[in-house]
Length: 269
Length: 292
Image (cartoon, rainbow over the protein chains, first blue to last red):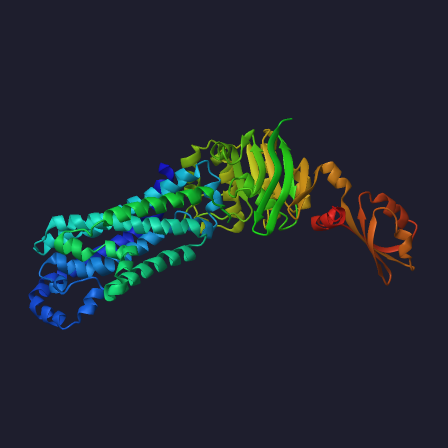
């Protein structure tokens, strides 16, 4: 099992280093800009005031969230509501594809599946290897901000970063479990990636539509983006009610189903 | 001799396509069994069921007395598998592939010997290897754990004769050690060189399981002969001769089995040119099994 895990992580090493460097570069850039942004906070507030309410609803924010009076509210908007989820999704899809779709696509499945290792063990070895990589990325992408705060003498509230790391972990594992399921169902990386990305875009759109139209408000409950709110986590240090349970249940069901299908399906190269 | 592989009533359907439709055969301990058939006959599907890559629609597969699906992990410790046109990880070197297999199967005692025998450079990445060297790596990975049973799906397809010979020699060494080998092929000379018994599959059904001697008796030859004088086609219409075509100065026909009656007949004419070639296996199938 360790052989499969270490091999998986070794194969993803360069990609993970690239993604981690990328997210830290964004963090460094945004944090470096924060002192001057804070000085212009009053002017920014006036600009924000001119925007229609629907604009903020569509992005699940309140005008107060964009005050940028604290580094948490600033990063919640600039980093954790935009760049960070995109990078998480890219990383998650790539890691999940390596569980099966990539092997079938490249024809390497015959080498892997001709080895004396049970399918369930192989599945969970790769699943947990991906999870280790994701948790590593998550920790660096959240707590990697702290050295930059120290560097620029910026006040911060570490408990709010704990909250987004915790909420982000559950969100990330749920997305990863969904992408894993698609990787097991489809035999091609392209199809699997398209299904995962398509499902997330659909969830995002449903969340926006729900916030714009009161009669459709309930459809927000089928969207991951309702349950994961970076602005709520970083601005107020709070988590959306029931979100951890929803993400946990979804992750267990999707992963269980993926493991069942992985064990049952034909592996034809 | 006990059976190492027993396949009973194996069926594998992909929707309406019956890729394998009731295949049964046994492979005995220590023998080299050739699994023959034209492209699309069901050889690879049968082998994939055997390796538990795909699951049968119906039927039973027993290997070394164990169930191929329920005891898949134990069995794979004892099976070395190689497919034709082997596809491995592009960015891994040969050594990395070897280390990966060792991380699951344990340290190999014979890998260095195999590398030397095949004159293989394991430091290169897979994507940098020629198709022959890729196949060498696949062979090393299949044989490095000294398996009791070797399963090969058209392992020499597209390889040059030198490498084909190297593979035949390696397989002969394994045969001498008493290992059992199942090899699928549509290359008759290869089968003649390696195999003790053959099974022939056509359109998903087993049409014959015979010793190589029996198969040789059914060999088909294609005869093209030119004469100084006009010869009647009816002169050659006797047992074993089929598909006679008339040429302006000769005949083309197929001969199944013994060639001597045809040669005796030809000796009675003045022949200006004569060519006798082995029909390929596809023709053998068509001629001998089209009625089955």
